[in-house]
Length: 155
Image (tube, rainbow, N blue to C red; front, side, top):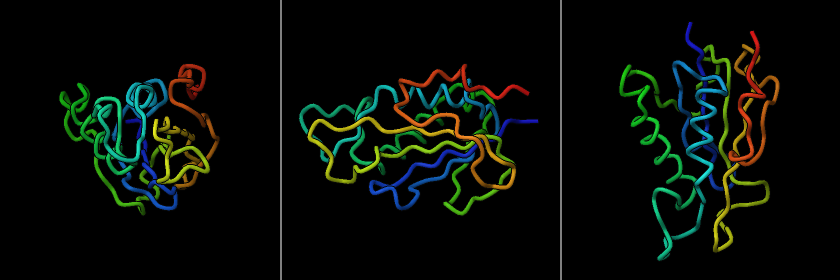
């Protein structure tokens, strides 16, 4: 059976979800978690485009980050090889038999009034409790600080 996961990208103020991505397989931390870590570890969320803006390392708000993430996942070798690997859902996706849930957001207290230099987004990961609700929190912090191998679910 595939290891399903949901990835939610929160809005700038964190009150709503910009996009919910359903990942049909390889949703465990050492696969999808590692991919999200790779994407986010070099990314800064800024407010406005300046002369230093680089779309490979910067996102102009969480809306652009969500769009960049979807494109980046679609260009992934897994998605290219198998197709049907990621799907976009609305925020009401609930229980899709996911084993893991991921959330990408700005640090607490940050909203659209970001510092000029930008901020690193926060990545959170939970085991799903099988009822469409968060279970055990596995990680909450900057993606570059996550050792995904230490949080792998032993089954």
